[in-house]
Amino acid sequence: MGNRCARTPCCTKLWSCLCCCCCSNNKARARSQHGSKGNVYSITRIEKWEEKISEANNNGKILVVFFSASWCVPCKKIEPVFRELASRYPSMIFVTIDVEELAEFSDEWNVEATPTIVFLKDGRQMDKLVGAETSELQKKTAAAADLLLRKP
Image (cartoon, rainbow, N blue to C red; front, side, top):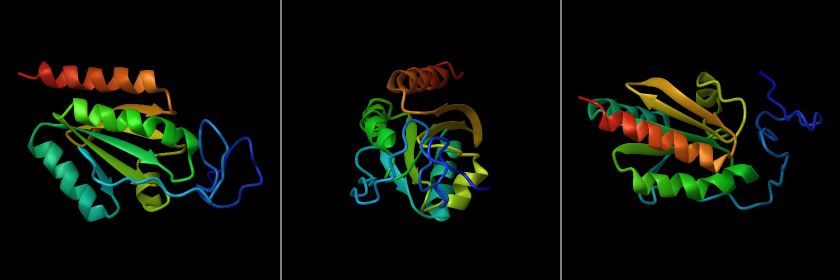
């Protein structure tokens, strides 16, 4: 699949410079901490993904999936907003996936740029945001929460 940054065609490594808002390829930066702080869970294995999607499906929750990369500056910009929304909306499950750690899985979900945030209900995509537009993330998350409230 040769995903490369449109601004920097010299990139040769998958996900090495794939960021929809910038072309920072600064590998020297420390990896961001995607632990399970608050209500955000780091998915590093498929088994953990299956556990979270089952939890969401079995409890009628929406799963909000943040596909990011450690070197992606816009991912770092939107991550605090993502974490704040996770605290604000406990009726949803928020997870992070590093596209380099689970590259095949990211391909299955058609993640072509970072950051990408996908909203899933009953295992199906109900919405998607590509890019670090914090206001759009807030709107889409609020709309998903409203959907849960209107559920009979």
